[in-house]
Amino acid sequence: MTTFTANPIPILVGKPNHLAVGSWLLVICVMVLLMVIIGGVTRLTHSGLSMVVWEPITSWLPPLTTDEWQKIFLIYKETPEFKKINYGMGLDDFKSIFWLEYFHRLWGRIIGITFLLPFFYFLLRGWISRSLASKLIFIFILGMAQGVLGWFMVKSGLSDRPDVSQYRLTAHLAVAIILYAYLFWIALGQLHDQKMEKSIISKNCQRLAVTNFLWLFFTMLAGGLVAGLDAGFTYNTFPLMDGKLIPDGLFENSPVYINFFENIITVQFAHRLMAIVAVILVASLWWQARKEIASIPDLWPFHVFITIVILQFVLGVATLILVVPIHLAAAHQLGAFLSLTACLWALDRLVYRRKIDK
Image 1 (cartoon, one colour):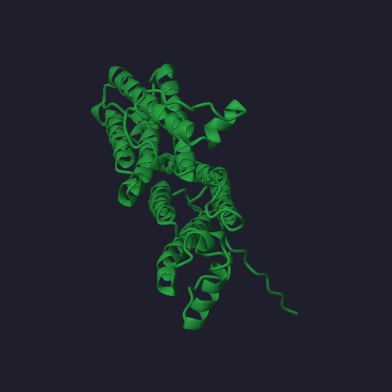
Image 2 (image 1 turned 90 degrees about the vertical axis):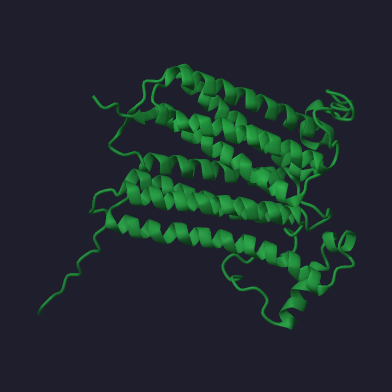
């Protein structure tokens, strides 16, 4: 009797292809940045609460018939947003906000597929090491958790209040920042070529860069609280607030710490102050890098970093003064992520540098 032995599918047999993997991860990063813009516009147009049912596996297709549209519109009519704000809305107006939220969720699914399919392909080809595979699996799990957190945020606006919790919105933003930053950092590591070597930059300069990153992270979270409380629609002057450098009412709530999360005056003032400090920190890093780095190509990330942060600061002031126009506010949200991107690029150059030809 003849027996047949199935040959196992070979995996992890090739050599790591850093260029292909790094390029793929950069594509995912760009898709995440587009997701940031879509999410920002969805929030600013008050479209996020239009889809009141979450079916991540089955709801790929939008309503296709008049009966389907009427059905989901009837569900929306039971929400606080419709009853308290959009009670005069017709079906056509509902469709305009529905499509934005639908595309926001659809784009998240497309990112997941664009991540997952090449991941398995690269893994089978042996282009991804085991250590890198574990990091990428963590990123995928974090991405799925981000989707769940997004729905958790939406649910906060479907019960009593017609808007989402600023805490859940800021948590949703925090996970997005962590996911994007980790993804971009891994991509940079994959794209290092043979002309790179470990840097000899001082530890003080490296610590300053890490401080910049952490400060930007918390400044972005403060911006999330501003967005969640609609704090940008008040005190639309700069640098004064209500005619003063330090406005009244900063600590009128008790306990004192709650003002930093629920007091519109305190939240906006904190974000202003943190943005000013961010510019100072970035300028300090740029100045220190110019003193320690001799290679002009290695200085480029720092020039880009300080330029983006200054533009982001100006954009934030303009968004405030003009009372949060959608195009400026969405650009300001994107600018925050671009600032973070430039910071990571600069930090990477403090860890690795181009080899000097001898």
